[in-house]
Length: 488
Image 1 (cartoon, rainbow, N blue to C red):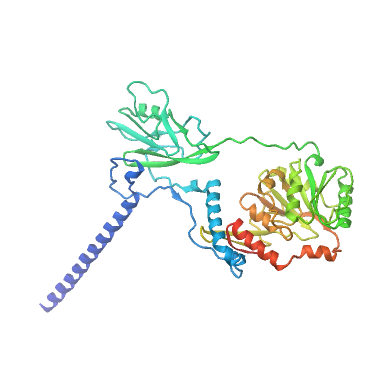
Image 2: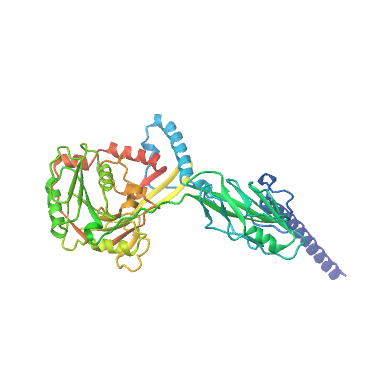
């Protein structure tokens, strides 16, 4: 008997443990299910009435706003706000926050939402790519219902920035909410319902050249969300490339004080390209005449700076491409502009192709974290790093920035522009402003020479500005680029 008692005791302990386990598991499962259902059910404020509660948890399909909440980090560098005078920081931060909010609106960030496709739904709809012209009545393609037999089929659609309607509604067809934001369609015949869905139109009531609406399409306890892109069609702006390099490319030069080097450069260009147009933006303290066939010499107010001159030069280009060179460069026998153009023409997505100066290819990646909306982003320049090779072109690699010898697509570079606030030392900053907009590659073998330095003391004082310039520059980036820090 003692053995039986011991066995009975063990059984009782095991049963007690199992009952306890199932009790707590059931409690946890109930709470988890309730939480999931609370997240996936749709509130009455969304305009859906008498929604049935599903008998299984469904994942919310959005929309979710893509917003960064985590701060970013730039190691071993001072935060940009450190260079803003303390008595100005609070007011500047408020102005920056407001400007960033407006930037989010202008760039469509308020429409930057994530929508997940449901695992299974009887609703057919355009998941992406449905575009309408503002305030123009447009058929919504692909709407349909595929389901088993029912006595009555009823679907509904709702939008926020437009009106819905069904074309050519006949007697007996059940359509409620014509020319309203919420449209309901019902029928006892599935084929008739789908015929009505094929005639549903959307008309935006908000005029905007680039925004979007979200359409909510529901049947019983199923709902899908799809975007409607509201966009004003743009007119193409094309450049006639003509028949030779002279009608394809303009050579651009920013000149300052170094007229001896400038004339050597021009002569080297003319030796290889006698007829190509040369545009010079010159902000020298005492301008000298620069003469020659097909040369445009623009004299600026003194010492306006590097980027102001670049803007002026690019603004006068009438060719599809421009070649950027410094005023102390030197064309070599291997300097072939045609090689740049061949790459650009073969890969129309490219915006900038960089070469090398006296063997110095200088290229870099920009590691950018958007950071939190309050603090701003972090940028680190990583030199001599590439992303991937350019297919079909040995020695060419995708990067974020290149050396001062590059071929630029005129219209793309104009859209980014050169910040005239940056007067002295600036180059990376152009590629920072173009990050995400310019597709850039660096190519080995596209060479140009560099003249020996003969800088005067006056030139050196401009070329190497005081520390205060660098501090003002970081303060500028703190606001303009919404940066927490920037590391070169």
